[in-house]
Length: 217
Ligand code: KIV
Image (cartoon, rainbow, N blue to C red; front, side, top):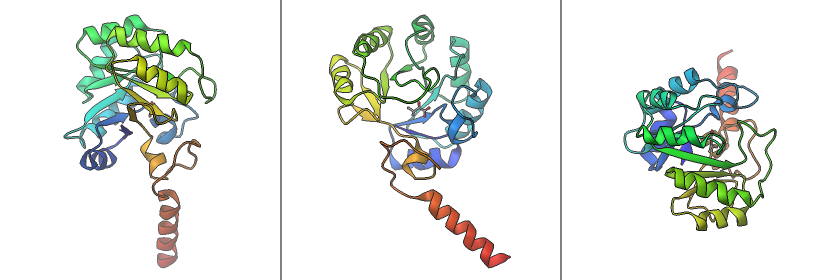
């Protein structure tokens, strides 16, 4: 799984064969220049889900439910904008998650470091996560993102579940992996330590723009 917030990146991911394109609320930091994901609104998610959806023909398009937006009505709005599944952080509102699933909308869970509610990124080691993951599976989610979960714990969770886990900074034992595409391409000014960028697009872009300026001034 990789993230996209617009048509061209979604198109590249789809063409490359990515299984799931995620319109993550990481768009707050990555695209909108916000300090965290809490300022991302439903309007932002709908706008970017529509844009990314235009580029996806084959992959599953999933969209994040932003901070304080959890309801079946909002999940339906994301589906109308093009999402085929929604992702929800944490287990605090399991009742709402069940309602969204009952409305026929597939839900992906998200455990470990939760950017919408945690103060700052840190590795999660609490074994209580195993029970939370089981509760999400019982509720009917189809996959669970494990963000910054201690790798042996991520392995235990993966082994305890029938549904797939998708890790980010959680070691190699998860069933799948996810990254923010801007981090993968080296386009972000900052990226987490676990990211190994495949390109240095920020540096290359800076160089290209400087060359253009020098040629044309
Ligand atoms: O918002 C996001 O991009 C995410 C991924 C990092 C999993 O939740």
